[in-house]
Amino acid sequence: MSSKPFTNFLVIFTLVLLCLVGSSHTKCDFKAIFNFGDSNSDTGGFWAAFPAQSSPFGMTYFKKPTGRATDGRLIVDFLAQALGLPFLSPYLQSIGSNYKHGANFATLASTVLLPNTSLFVTGISPFSLAIQLNQLKQFKTKVNQVYEQGTELPSPDIFGKSLYTFYIGQNDFTSNLAAIGIGGVQQYLPQVVSQIASTIKEIYNLGGRTFLVLNLAPVGCYPAFLVELPHNSSDIDEFGCLVSYNNAVVEYNNMLKETLRQTRESLSDASVIYVDVYAVLLELFRHPTSHGLKYGIKACCGYGGGDYNFDPKAYCGNSKVINGSRVTSTACIDPYNYVSWDGIHATEAANKLTTFAILNGSYSDPPFPFHERCDLQPIG
Image 1 (cartoon, one colour):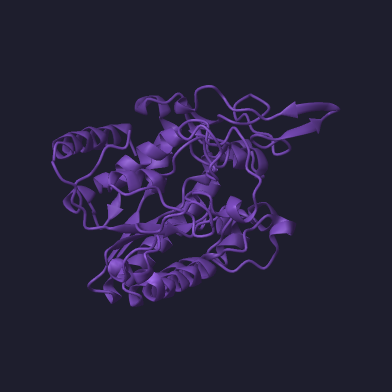
Image 2 (cartoon, rainbow, N blue to C red):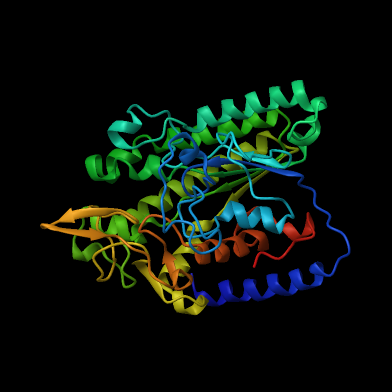
Protein backbone atom coordinates (compact mmCIF):
# COMPACT_ATOMS: atom_id res chain seq x y z
CA MET A 1 0.00 0.00 0.00
CA SER A 2 1.40 3.41 -0.87
CA SER A 3 1.60 6.27 1.62
CA LYS A 4 -0.46 8.70 -0.47
CA PRO A 5 -3.96 7.36 0.24
CA PHE A 6 -3.06 7.12 3.91
CA THR A 7 -2.11 10.79 3.96
CA ASN A 8 -5.22 11.79 2.02
CA PHE A 9 -7.64 10.18 4.44
CA LEU A 10 -5.94 11.98 7.34
CA VAL A 11 -6.51 15.28 5.57
CA ILE A 12 -10.14 14.41 4.82
CA PHE A 13 -10.75 13.25 8.38
CA THR A 14 -9.27 16.46 9.78
CA LEU A 15 -11.54 18.58 7.58
CA VAL A 16 -14.60 16.60 8.69
CA LEU A 17 -13.57 16.92 12.34
CA LEU A 18 -13.07 20.69 12.06
CA CYS A 19 -16.63 21.02 10.80
CA LEU A 20 -18.00 18.97 13.68
CA VAL A 21 -16.02 20.44 16.57
CA GLY A 22 -17.93 23.69 16.31
CA SER A 23 -21.19 21.96 17.23
CA SER A 24 -22.85 23.27 20.38
CA HIS A 25 -23.80 19.77 21.44
CA THR A 26 -22.36 16.30 21.33
CA LYS A 27 -24.43 13.58 19.72
CA CYS A 28 -23.33 9.97 19.42
CA ASP A 29 -25.14 6.72 18.78
CA PHE A 30 -22.73 4.98 21.16
CA LYS A 31 -23.23 5.62 24.87
CA ALA A 32 -20.55 3.18 25.98
CA ILE A 33 -17.65 1.00 24.82
CA PHE A 34 -17.06 -2.55 25.97
CA ASN A 35 -13.60 -3.77 24.99
CA PHE A 36 -12.12 -7.26 24.76
CA GLY A 37 -8.43 -7.74 24.15
CA ASP A 38 -4.84 -8.15 25.21
CA SER A 39 -2.04 -5.68 25.97
CA ASN A 40 -2.81 -3.72 22.81
CA SER A 41 -5.98 -2.45 24.50
CA ASP A 42 -5.54 -3.17 28.23
CA THR A 43 -6.04 0.06 30.19
CA GLY A 44 -4.84 -1.43 33.47
CA GLY A 45 -6.65 -4.71 34.04
CA PHE A 46 -3.60 -6.96 34.20
CA TRP A 47 -1.68 -4.69 36.54
CA ALA A 48 -4.76 -4.33 38.76
CA ALA A 49 -4.64 -8.11 39.21
CA PHE A 50 -0.84 -8.36 39.36
CA PRO A 51 0.54 -4.94 40.45
CA ALA A 52 4.07 -4.40 39.15
CA GLN A 53 4.24 -1.94 36.24
CA SER A 54 6.91 0.77 36.51
CA SER A 55 8.21 3.69 34.51
CA PRO A 56 8.86 4.63 31.73
CA PHE A 57 5.42 3.29 30.77
CA GLY A 58 2.88 6.12 30.61
CA MET A 59 5.57 8.80 30.25
CA THR A 60 3.98 10.70 27.37
CA TYR A 61 0.37 11.46 28.27
CA PHE A 62 -0.35 10.29 31.80
CA LYS A 63 3.16 11.07 33.10
CA LYS A 64 3.06 7.88 35.17
CA PRO A 65 2.41 4.14 34.68
CA THR A 66 -1.31 3.43 34.26
CA GLY A 67 -1.22 -0.23 33.28
CA ARG A 68 -1.04 0.51 29.56
CA ALA A 69 1.72 -1.21 27.57
CA THR A 70 2.85 1.97 25.84
CA ASP A 71 4.14 5.46 26.51
CA GLY A 72 0.66 7.04 26.49
CA ARG A 73 -2.74 6.31 25.04
CA LEU A 74 -4.01 3.24 23.24
CA ILE A 75 -6.35 2.99 20.27
CA VAL A 76 -9.27 2.31 22.62
CA ASP A 77 -8.41 5.50 24.54
CA PHE A 78 -8.45 7.59 21.37
CA LEU A 79 -11.72 5.98 20.28
CA ALA A 80 -13.31 6.89 23.60
CA GLN A 81 -12.09 10.47 23.33
CA ALA A 82 -13.36 10.79 19.76
CA LEU A 83 -16.80 9.56 20.80
CA GLY A 84 -16.92 11.98 23.73
CA LEU A 85 -16.60 9.22 26.33
CA PRO A 86 -14.21 8.93 29.30
CA PHE A 87 -11.34 6.46 29.24
CA LEU A 88 -12.52 2.93 29.95
CA SER A 89 -12.04 1.63 33.47
CA PRO A 90 -10.60 -1.89 33.67
CA TYR A 91 -13.16 -4.42 34.86
CA LEU A 92 -10.57 -5.80 37.31
CA GLN A 93 -9.77 -2.43 38.88
CA SER A 94 -11.56 -2.12 42.22
CA ILE A 95 -10.58 1.45 43.14
CA GLY A 96 -11.45 4.59 41.21
CA SER A 97 -13.42 2.89 38.44
CA ASN A 98 -16.53 4.28 36.75
CA TYR A 99 -18.50 2.00 34.47
CA LYS A 100 -21.29 4.33 33.36
CA HIS A 101 -19.86 4.43 29.86
CA GLY A 102 -18.57 0.89 29.52
CA ALA A 103 -15.82 -1.37 30.78
CA ASN A 104 -12.56 -2.82 29.58
CA PHE A 105 -12.14 -6.58 29.95
CA ALA A 106 -8.77 -6.73 28.17
CA THR A 107 -5.64 -7.84 29.98
CA LEU A 108 -2.03 -8.02 28.95
CA ALA A 109 -0.99 -11.42 27.50
CA SER A 110 -4.57 -12.57 26.96
CA THR A 111 -5.45 -15.09 24.26
CA VAL A 112 -8.60 -15.90 22.33
CA LEU A 113 -8.32 -19.60 23.11
CA LEU A 114 -8.25 -20.94 26.66
CA PRO A 115 -4.61 -21.20 27.73
CA ASN A 116 -3.22 -24.65 28.47
CA THR A 117 -0.48 -23.24 30.66
CA SER A 118 0.01 -20.93 33.63
CA LEU A 119 0.86 -17.25 33.80
CA PHE A 120 3.76 -18.15 36.07
CA VAL A 121 5.17 -20.66 33.57
CA THR A 122 4.83 -18.94 30.18
CA GLY A 123 3.47 -15.49 30.98
CA ILE A 124 0.09 -16.08 29.30
CA SER A 125 -2.81 -14.34 31.06
CA PRO A 126 -5.55 -16.48 32.61
CA PHE A 127 -8.13 -13.97 31.30
CA SER A 128 -8.80 -15.41 27.85
CA LEU A 129 -11.64 -14.22 25.62
CA ALA A 130 -14.07 -16.74 27.13
CA ILE A 131 -13.32 -15.39 30.61
CA GLN A 132 -13.74 -11.82 29.38
CA LEU A 133 -17.12 -12.74 27.91
CA ASN A 134 -18.19 -14.25 31.24
CA GLN A 135 -17.13 -11.03 32.94
CA LEU A 136 -19.41 -9.07 30.59
CA LYS A 137 -22.29 -11.40 31.43
CA GLN A 138 -21.66 -10.92 35.14
CA PHE A 139 -21.41 -7.16 34.62
CA LYS A 140 -24.78 -7.11 32.85
CA THR A 141 -26.35 -9.16 35.64
CA LYS A 142 -25.03 -6.76 38.29
CA VAL A 143 -26.24 -3.73 36.32
CA ASN A 144 -29.74 -5.16 36.21
CA GLN A 145 -29.63 -5.89 39.95
CA VAL A 146 -28.16 -2.71 41.46
CA TYR A 147 -28.66 0.12 38.95
CA GLU A 148 -31.37 1.80 41.03
CA GLN A 149 -29.01 2.03 44.00
CA GLY A 150 -27.08 4.95 42.49
CA THR A 151 -23.84 3.09 41.84
CA GLU A 152 -21.25 4.00 39.21
CA LEU A 153 -22.95 1.74 36.67
CA PRO A 154 -24.79 2.42 33.40
CA SER A 155 -28.51 2.06 32.86
CA PRO A 156 -29.68 -1.46 31.96
CA ASP A 157 -30.50 -0.40 28.40
CA ILE A 158 -26.88 0.58 27.67
CA PHE A 159 -25.96 -2.77 26.11
CA GLY A 160 -27.91 -2.09 22.93
CA LYS A 161 -26.40 1.39 22.61
CA SER A 162 -22.75 0.38 22.92
CA LEU A 163 -19.76 -0.21 20.70
CA TYR A 164 -18.12 -3.61 21.28
CA THR A 165 -14.45 -3.62 20.32
CA PHE A 166 -12.10 -6.56 19.89
CA TYR A 167 -8.32 -6.30 19.60
CA ILE A 168 -7.11 -9.78 20.49
CA GLY A 169 -5.38 -12.76 18.88
CA GLN A 170 -1.78 -11.61 18.71
CA ASN A 171 -0.72 -13.84 21.60
CA ASP A 172 -2.45 -16.86 20.08
CA PHE A 173 -0.37 -16.21 16.98
CA THR A 174 3.00 -15.32 18.51
CA SER A 175 3.32 -17.19 21.81
CA ASN A 176 4.24 -20.51 20.18
CA LEU A 177 5.93 -19.28 16.99
CA ALA A 178 9.47 -19.91 18.15
CA ALA A 179 8.62 -23.41 19.41
CA ILE A 180 6.40 -24.84 16.67
CA GLY A 181 6.88 -22.45 13.75
CA ILE A 182 4.36 -20.89 11.39
CA GLY A 183 3.00 -24.25 10.23
CA GLY A 184 2.30 -25.39 13.77
CA VAL A 185 0.53 -22.16 14.71
CA GLN A 186 -1.62 -22.22 11.58
CA GLN A 187 -3.14 -25.52 12.69
CA TYR A 188 -5.19 -23.88 15.43
CA LEU A 189 -5.85 -20.41 13.96
CA PRO A 190 -9.27 -21.52 12.56
CA GLN A 191 -10.29 -22.13 16.17
CA VAL A 192 -9.24 -18.59 17.03
CA VAL A 193 -11.45 -16.92 14.43
CA SER A 194 -14.30 -19.29 15.26
CA GLN A 195 -14.08 -18.30 18.93
CA ILE A 196 -14.20 -14.60 18.06
CA ALA A 197 -17.28 -15.16 15.89
CA SER A 198 -19.07 -17.18 18.56
CA THR A 199 -18.30 -14.49 21.15
CA ILE A 200 -19.88 -11.86 18.91
CA LYS A 201 -22.99 -14.00 18.59
CA GLU A 202 -23.24 -14.42 22.35
CA ILE A 203 -22.93 -10.66 22.89
CA TYR A 204 -25.57 -10.16 20.21
CA ASN A 205 -27.88 -12.31 22.32
CA LEU A 206 -27.14 -9.99 25.25
CA GLY A 207 -28.27 -7.00 23.19
CA GLY A 208 -25.09 -5.90 21.41
CA ARG A 209 -25.49 -4.68 17.84
CA THR A 210 -22.25 -2.95 16.80
CA PHE A 211 -18.97 -4.88 16.78
CA LEU A 212 -15.58 -3.52 15.74
CA VAL A 213 -12.96 -6.25 15.24
CA LEU A 214 -9.35 -5.20 14.66
CA ASN A 215 -7.20 -7.67 12.75
CA LEU A 216 -3.65 -8.71 13.60
CA ALA A 217 -0.79 -6.27 13.16
CA PRO A 218 2.28 -7.00 10.99
CA VAL A 219 4.31 -8.74 13.71
CA GLY A 220 7.05 -9.40 11.17
CA CYS A 221 7.96 -5.71 11.53
CA TYR A 222 8.09 -5.76 15.33
CA PRO A 223 11.64 -5.35 16.71
CA ALA A 224 11.11 -8.09 19.31
CA PHE A 225 10.23 -10.70 16.70
CA LEU A 226 12.93 -9.53 14.32
CA VAL A 227 15.39 -10.30 17.12
CA GLU A 228 13.84 -13.44 18.57
CA LEU A 229 12.20 -15.40 15.75
CA PRO A 230 14.34 -17.71 13.60
CA HIS A 231 14.86 -16.46 10.05
CA ASN A 232 17.51 -15.90 7.41
CA SER A 233 18.45 -12.75 5.55
CA SER A 234 16.42 -13.72 2.48
CA ASP A 235 13.26 -13.50 4.61
CA ILE A 236 13.78 -9.76 5.21
CA ASP A 237 12.05 -7.41 2.78
CA GLU A 238 13.32 -4.01 1.62
CA PHE A 239 11.74 -2.34 4.66
CA GLY A 240 13.40 -4.67 7.16
CA CYS A 241 10.31 -6.80 7.94
CA LEU A 242 10.00 -10.58 8.04
CA VAL A 243 8.16 -11.67 4.89
CA SER A 244 7.12 -15.19 5.97
CA TYR A 245 5.66 -14.07 9.30
CA ASN A 246 3.77 -11.16 7.79
CA ASN A 247 2.43 -13.45 5.06
CA ALA A 248 1.15 -15.78 7.77
CA VAL A 249 -0.57 -12.86 9.48
CA VAL A 250 -2.22 -11.92 6.17
CA GLU A 251 -3.56 -15.48 5.84
CA TYR A 252 -5.00 -15.28 9.34
CA ASN A 253 -6.51 -11.86 8.65
CA ASN A 254 -8.16 -13.11 5.47
CA MET A 255 -9.65 -16.01 7.45
CA LEU A 256 -10.91 -13.58 10.09
CA LYS A 257 -12.39 -11.27 7.46
CA GLU A 258 -14.29 -14.12 5.80
CA THR A 259 -15.55 -15.46 9.12
CA LEU A 260 -16.81 -12.01 10.10
CA ARG A 261 -18.54 -11.71 6.73
CA GLN A 262 -20.40 -14.93 7.44
CA THR A 263 -21.21 -13.72 10.95
CA ARG A 264 -22.56 -10.47 9.51
CA GLU A 265 -24.88 -12.38 7.21
CA SER A 266 -26.27 -14.42 10.09
CA LEU A 267 -26.93 -11.29 12.22
CA SER A 268 -28.86 -9.16 9.75
CA ASP A 269 -29.63 -6.28 12.13
CA ALA A 270 -26.08 -6.01 13.50
CA SER A 271 -22.98 -4.17 12.29
CA VAL A 272 -19.99 -6.53 12.32
CA ILE A 273 -17.01 -4.50 11.17
CA TYR A 274 -13.58 -5.84 10.21
CA VAL A 275 -10.84 -3.24 10.68
CA ASP A 276 -7.57 -3.54 8.77
CA VAL A 277 -5.07 -2.12 11.26
CA TYR A 278 -2.49 -4.40 9.62
CA ALA A 279 -2.49 -2.17 6.54
CA VAL A 280 -2.22 1.01 8.60
CA LEU A 281 0.66 -0.20 10.77
CA LEU A 282 2.48 -1.79 7.84
CA GLU A 283 2.41 1.60 6.13
CA LEU A 284 3.81 3.26 9.26
CA PHE A 285 6.59 0.69 9.60
CA ARG A 286 7.49 1.03 5.93
CA HIS A 287 7.21 4.79 5.53
CA PRO A 288 7.42 6.42 8.97
CA THR A 289 8.74 9.72 7.65
CA SER A 290 5.70 10.10 5.38
CA HIS A 291 3.53 10.38 8.49
CA GLY A 292 5.58 12.62 10.76
CA LEU A 293 7.60 9.84 12.38
CA LYS A 294 11.27 8.88 12.05
CA TYR A 295 11.76 5.26 13.09
CA GLY A 296 9.88 2.19 11.93
CA ILE A 297 11.42 -1.07 13.14
CA LYS A 298 13.46 0.41 16.00
CA ALA A 299 12.06 0.36 19.54
CA CYS A 300 11.92 3.56 21.58
CA CYS A 301 12.24 1.78 24.92
CA GLY A 302 14.85 -0.96 24.90
CA TYR A 303 18.49 -1.89 25.22
CA GLY A 304 21.23 -2.58 22.75
CA GLY A 305 20.86 0.18 20.19
CA GLY A 306 21.44 -0.83 16.59
CA ASP A 307 18.66 -1.36 14.09
CA TYR A 308 16.14 -2.68 16.63
CA ASN A 309 17.18 -1.46 20.11
CA PHE A 310 15.72 -4.62 21.60
CA ASP A 311 17.28 -7.24 23.84
CA PRO A 312 14.96 -9.89 25.36
CA LYS A 313 17.25 -10.09 28.39
CA ALA A 314 16.52 -6.43 29.26
CA TYR A 315 12.93 -5.56 28.48
CA CYS A 316 11.70 -1.96 28.63
CA GLY A 317 12.14 -0.48 32.11
CA ASN A 318 14.04 -3.48 33.50
CA SER A 319 17.57 -3.64 34.87
CA LYS A 320 19.57 -6.82 34.35
CA VAL A 321 23.13 -8.06 34.59
CA ILE A 322 24.37 -8.80 31.07
CA ASN A 323 27.93 -9.98 30.44
CA GLY A 324 28.91 -9.06 33.98
CA SER A 325 27.53 -5.52 33.85
CA ARG A 326 24.25 -4.16 35.17
CA VAL A 327 22.29 -2.46 32.40
CA THR A 328 18.93 -0.71 32.30
CA SER A 329 16.53 -0.71 29.39
CA THR A 330 15.51 2.92 29.06
CA ALA A 331 13.15 4.94 26.89
CA CYS A 332 14.06 7.39 24.18
CA ILE A 333 13.31 11.07 24.79
CA ASP A 334 11.14 11.33 21.67
CA PRO A 335 8.63 8.47 21.51
CA TYR A 336 6.52 10.63 19.18
CA ASN A 337 9.07 9.82 16.47
CA TYR A 338 8.67 6.02 16.79
CA VAL A 339 6.18 3.42 15.62
CA SER A 340 7.35 0.82 18.16
CA TRP A 341 7.34 1.61 21.86
CA ASP A 342 9.04 -1.42 23.41
CA GLY A 343 9.58 -3.83 20.52
CA ILE A 344 6.13 -5.43 20.95
CA HIS A 345 3.64 -2.57 21.31
CA ALA A 346 2.95 0.61 19.37
CA THR A 347 3.65 4.10 20.64
CA GLU A 348 0.93 6.62 21.40
CA ALA A 349 1.88 8.38 18.15
CA ALA A 350 1.27 5.24 16.10
CA ASN A 351 -1.92 4.49 18.02
CA LYS A 352 -3.24 7.96 17.22
CA LEU A 353 -2.55 7.59 13.49
CA THR A 354 -4.20 4.17 13.53
CA THR A 355 -7.25 5.62 15.26
CA PHE A 356 -7.58 8.28 12.56
CA ALA A 357 -7.77 5.46 10.03
CA ILE A 358 -10.43 3.64 12.05
CA LEU A 359 -12.55 6.76 12.50
CA ASN A 360 -12.33 7.58 8.81
CA GLY A 361 -13.90 4.23 8.03
CA SER A 362 -11.98 3.53 4.85
CA TYR A 363 -9.96 0.73 6.43
CA SER A 364 -13.12 -1.05 7.54
CA ASP A 365 -15.15 -3.76 5.83
CA PRO A 366 -17.85 -2.78 5.29
CA PRO A 367 -16.90 0.93 5.38
CA PHE A 368 -17.88 2.43 8.72
CA PRO A 369 -17.32 6.21 8.85
CA PHE A 370 -17.81 7.17 12.48
CA HIS A 371 -18.71 10.76 11.70
CA GLU A 372 -22.05 9.52 10.39
CA ARG A 373 -22.84 8.02 13.81
CA CYS A 374 -21.25 10.59 16.13
CA ASP A 375 -20.19 14.20 16.40
CA LEU A 376 -16.51 13.36 16.68
CA GLN A 377 -14.38 15.13 19.25
CA PRO A 378 -10.68 16.11 19.00
CA ILE A 379 -8.14 13.47 20.05
CA GLY A 380 -5.08 15.68 20.36
